[in-house]
Image (cartoon, rainbow, N blue to C red; front, side):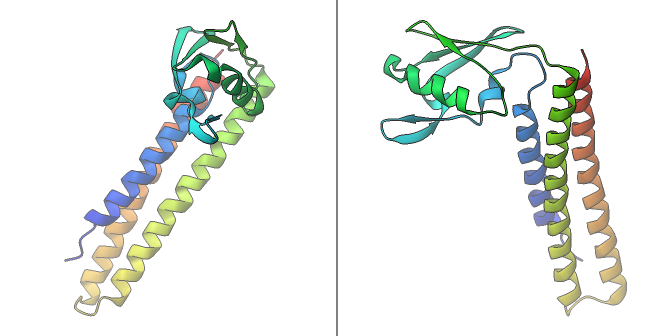
Length: 181
C-alpha cells in the first residue's frame, strides 16, 4: 500500500505557512502580527522586529512598540515607514513607538483582498507540486499493481482537495474579516 503520511506532512506545512501569511494581512484592527514581516537593521544586520522590540496592541487602532534597546528607535521607525504595503506612519517619543492604524477605505480593502488572493494561489501551486511529486512516485513504483496505483492516486487527489479546501476556507474567513466595516 502507498503511504501518504509524508505528503500529508508537506501539505500541512504549506497550509501552516499560508495561515502565518494570512495573520500578517492587515484587517483594519491593530494586531502585533501585522508587523511580523518587518526587518530592522540593528548593529549592522537585519533582524525581525519582534526580536528587537516588544509589540502590543493598545486598542483596536493603535500598536505600541517598546524597543529592547532605545537606541534602535530610529531604525525601527524607518523600517515601518519603508514598508509601503502597510501604509503606516509611526511616531516615537524617545522611549516607545506608537503606530496608529488608520481606517481602511473600501478601495484599500479590495486591494488587500486581491493581494491575499495571490498568497492563496501560491499555496495552491505548492499543494499541486506536492501532488505531482507524489503521483510521479506512484507511477514509478514497480512493486504496485495497477489497481493499487489507481487507489493511491485517488488518495493523493483526495488529500490535495482536503488541503485546498482548508486554504480556501481560511482565505474566505480572512477576506470576510477584511471587508467587514
